[in-house]
Length: 302
Image (cartoon, rainbow, N blue to C red; front, side, top):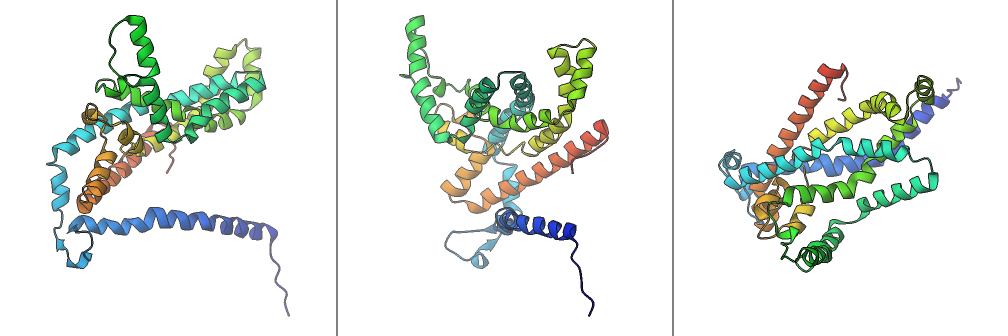
């Protein structure tokens, strides 16, 4: 009887495949199974009634999107927040470069820890902190009023300050965490390139410009394309918490409007229709950004 031998390398590959199966199942359940819910967009769904008993409306809800003034308003806010976020995408890379230049390891670890911790703080706690500091009777507002001797309007109630203030909070929360992948990329740079640059007389700034940044551009392009794909996915938790009567017009983004329509107003069909259109736009933006990257750099991500 002929004995079959198992190649160790092949067994290792199968073991790695089996290790990824639970995560593949999670992705399937949470990312692909909900796609079957898109069917609600073509029915006038009423909660508590079987969808087979609801009226078929076809593309009526999709046509309503283009006639809804609130969609235009929230889409404008979403574009503003997204564009500001795209403009500021180099910040984590620059922060990682500056952090890497700190030669004292304990100091570098402390700075990295304190800048990464906000990522694990919920938006509810951040709102509580911001309310304590920037409300009408908050610490910062009262301090400014005491110094200037004038009545100061709370920044939380200022519609004109919504865009830059919410962007500042988002950067403060995610800057340290977003820089981790760049720190890992910096650790993989060949140190001989720095030595050769220093032999040619380059200082820290020249090494960063001519060695570090070019080496990080591959990572930056990948993350930039992913950021483009999330152009309309700004989330809603932050904006829902900071929304009030004075800032509603400028702070309500498309995700928050979808949440309000679908869950608060229980208009599930219209909310699903908006989500479908948003997903199609996101996919198109990823493909477009990938094509532009191929034209410019000669290689693609997808």
